[in-house]
Image 1 (cartoon, rainbow, N blue to C red):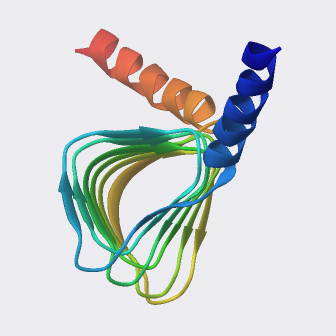
Image 2 (cartoon, rainbow, N blue to C red):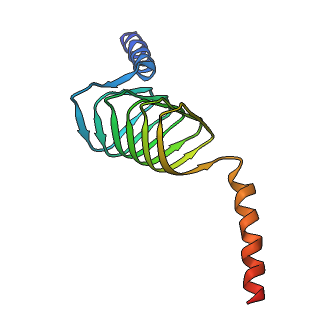
Image 3 (cartoon, one colour):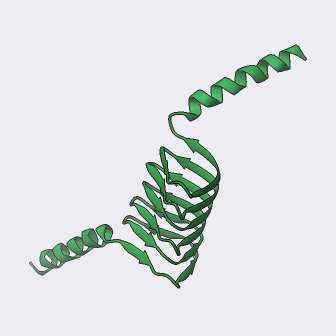
Length: 142
């Protein structure tokens, strides 16, 4: 009886923790890798890899340097590194993105800085096949 009663609150606590938002406040700097099932709000600095199945929100004072993997992301702050999203990347007017970006959808407000190599799922295959044919023809003509 006691063991079954103890297990239920633990399972409920685990479920609640995974749906709560993780917050890295302004003035906080984390160096290292972070993995979570829940969403993130980053107003501080993260140097390392961030991996989550939730949404990532980077505030105006937020900065990520490293690799970011997730579903969707909203940026008001800065990012430098490799960004891999299975969903949408939304850049607000104060966003500054540099590096390599792999996404499905992109939304950019006027004023945002986007200096990145970007590949979008669905269009990558059709674009990569077209340049290969002219390269093969030019190689044959030489």
